[in-house]
Amino acid sequence: MDIIKKYFPQLSARQYEQFMQMGDIYGYWNERINLISRKDIKNLYLHHILHSLSIGLYHPFKKNMLVMDVGTGGGFPGIPLAVLFPETEFYLIDSIAKKIKVVNEVVVSLGIKNVRAEQVRAADVKVKCNYVVSRAVSSLPVFYDWVKDKFAILPGRQSHGQEQGILYLKGGDINEELISVPGRAREVLLSEYFEEDFFETKKIVFIPV
Image (cartoon, rainbow, N blue to C red; front, side):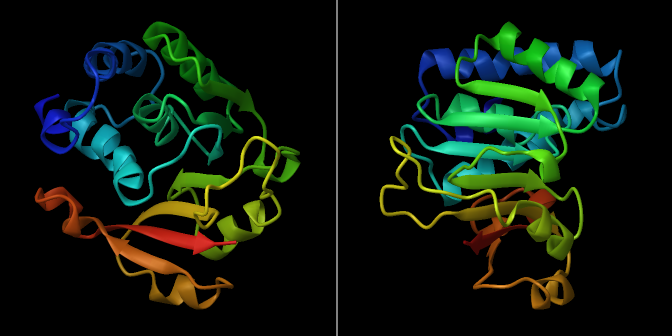
């Protein structure tokens, strides 16, 4: 939990409380449904929560925007981002029903009001959003094809002058994947934001649409 305070000292007492509660809540659910590697649950705050929040450091979301988290699994990156941006709407989707069940339980336990979760495949989603976020659920070209038609500036959800697009958490060498992605994809090294070794090879790929 201290690592969240280290990089987000501006958070409210309520936000800190919600992040603190995540440890026990995810520990409880991970014993019942394997959301995170059993060996990795002890690294929940560094490997999952802070990693998710890196998107918010690079590209803060504004009030009334709609952000879709595709392949959310246990709620990453969507749930930490929803706590960080309580005035932004988040739509979390996954094709696996038991994972969406856990996401809904976590949302209720934390008292989060700006998240809607649904079991659905990305190809079947009719929702139009300002941003899509995700954590390495497929190769970038495949993911781009899944979500390239999911964007629109909607009444009440203007992008406030920011570029809309995909914010994708990925690691390692992705040069070959980027060649096959249309547009002006940008790599953002997370080592520029965080000093922990875990982030040395981690990056955000931003693909404007």
